[in-house]
Length: 198
Image (spheres, rainbow, N blue to C red):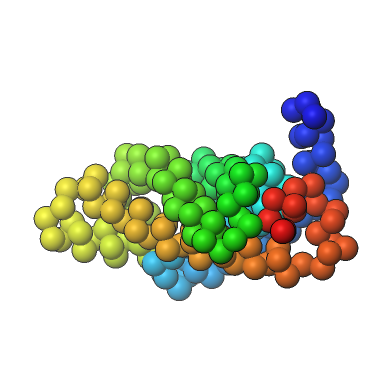
């Protein structure tokens, strides 16, 4: 199947509707977590969900649009992390494509891979655009590390990796459980659900 045909299949009307629902899910959960100042994000469950059932490009688009829309509505910081959200969707979709979402241990590995991928983009944004402080619950970790004598770059690296590692493993499991729990009639309409279902 050519790339054009695959993209047409991945971006069906059903997928586009699913992307819209996932964007709302991401923003609502992310806003609640942000207001509570929790040291976890959970704002990419919808992104990973779309990536699992519709592929990496649909997942990447979901993440990108989530953060751009969220940035316009309430939180300009979210827009700055739009490339990070896009990488989360792409990485999750690729993990699913290569079978890592078939078993529970693969979901953990996927969470680690997603964390490494996003860290490459998130660390420079957090350091150079925000001086390490973005207003999230993870700022407490950065502040603590700075107080113990770590330099800003090291503190942000540790914060991003440790905070996102837990978050992305939890997010990957939640998205995986949702896909596994969806009715077969629903899931059969998605182009790549076989990457998750056995």
